[in-house]
Image (cartoon, rainbow over all chains, first blue to last red; front, side):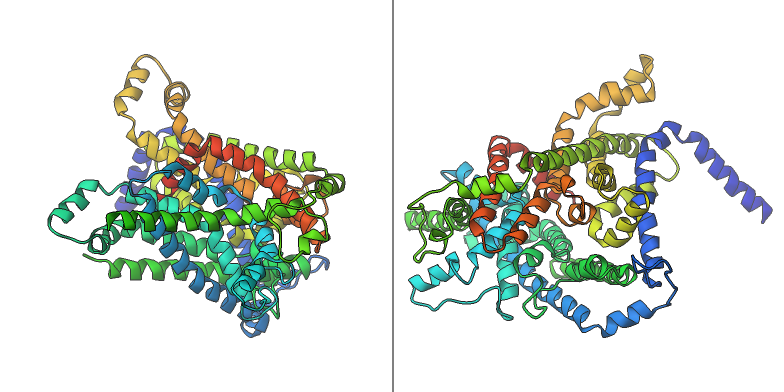
Length: 303
Length: 273
């Protein structure tokens, strides 16, 4: 027993002696940063979620799991979870299929290649806030461009952002438009790692372009697609700017996202403990979704 | 047949360009319309009576220069710090042996995965307790180290042949000397790609700057200023669009000049998986 402890101690001290001490100096800023801005906030969030932490009141009593119990029965919170998942169901397929199609088109030998790319990638460098405002104005009930377009084909105007049914789809359109360039770029970079000779060989063997896409492009691009789905999930779960500026979470809470709920509880009603509990639920949601996506995508494209 | 296919391809791509460009045209066009013409039916693309009143209104209501300075200062500080700390840690993770290297690198990847928004509430209380609400450090410090920056530097330094370091050490260079005199000058490309990425992230951030500058309008960044303005003048679409145009056009011009770097930066971040 003692001998084992001693040999373990020796192993550690030997590893320590062969460690490069300068390395610790170099990673020190990262370690300090991680402790202050990740580890501590994570623990503190847990602590907060078990307290009634009102900003204005000096005493912040321990209330056990009450915040979580309230969350489970809070219809507004439930609404925000349903809304966010509904948004993801619309958002995820759109930001894979549309950008992938554009990337495949842009990967051909084309004239005006540079022009097309510049046009598609432009939203990447446009503020989210600008995108949300411009689209809010395009969707406007009065004077909006989209209702004018409907009138051109003889359709009556639609109340996009003030309709319970259409507000979230309208927000999704906005968000998808903002992300298309980003994901197109990522898919294009992925496509360019596939050598042209692979396709040429397939053509010689008599494969049609559609076949080549499903048998060659998709399987080889699988890691990039998986990454895109995960990145889109992480970003989709953070939905806030668009509903905050376009609908204020309405109508009737139909566009209230989880992050918007956290913001409201924390900064409008000053219930920090409750907001922190909701933040932890969001963290778990994100973790579960990423794990599920990894599992299913890995299995589906095994070859 | 082939020509028809090509034609269809260009038609589709052209349609896509139209969809990509329309919001920009609509924004710019609306910014020059008065309160009557902006609601005119049918809407005009080029205003009959173009006016500059929207722009002068925005400029008189908000300290635009200060807001632009805040955005630039915060984004540049964050990128500078993230590049500096990222290059140091990336070098250590790539080339030096030390106890705990794997665990610490896994933590760096962890920070890449989980967005700051998850820590919104505890970080805000922390920043508040540190007395940093309504200050530049409150906007900068929470983003001063970037997992992505560490990762990109590590990948780059891992590819540099070890002989280079050994030769420098033989010539009497210290470990830090190797890093600062040999390695960092070689890694200009990583500075650009990681820098562009961190800069864009910070530049675009909205929720954190909004809560940290609440009650401190002199520290508003551009997204916060624009959101604040649009919510104070809800039905004045022309003025909001003028401000949106002012905030978009310069960035787009920079982007068109340095497109290569933006594209590389994002493509690289996508291939990291």
